[in-house]
Image 1 (cartoon, rainbow, N blue to C red):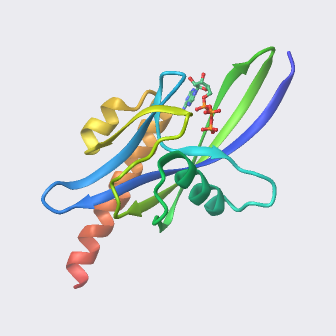
Image 2 (image 1 turned 180 degrees about the vertical axis):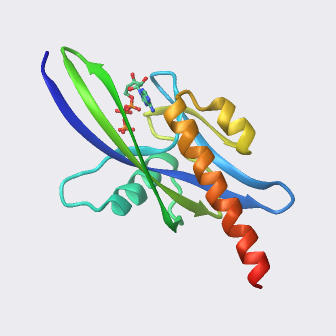
Length: 149
Ligand code: ATP
């Protein structure tokens, strides 16, 4: 069967809410699954340019700040008509201060969730693993910030 590769980039996008802590943004794809905002890397784009464009297109959020030092990739296969797609998705960690979301036609719902709820809501184990690592990275860097201030 014919195969081809697809590469997307996406964001573990979060907001830090006073009193409520870290909330992660998860989208409900029209195929049914819940996952992070992401999309295909277009020719000539850097991974970060893709993420900024896709987050803007898929959520309307345009103030994201990329957090340095976090980059993780996952891979999966799926069937598109008569072809097998070998897909890789590269995730960065990004922060926003705006929680207002305007969805595109690609998604049917969204949720800002704390770590445990986001972990439950995500549909795939590979994305859950990315969230676990992102949450550890974030909470570890917060502790470092506190102890050096
Ligand atoms: P993109 O957001 O990158 O443009 P897309 O909306 O075209 O992607 P995917 O989200 O990759 O498509 O979904 C395509 C197929 O792959 C669906 O059948 C979905 O169930 C499956 N899929 C999506 N994410 C994963 C994953 N993390 N692990 C395994 N299968 C996945």
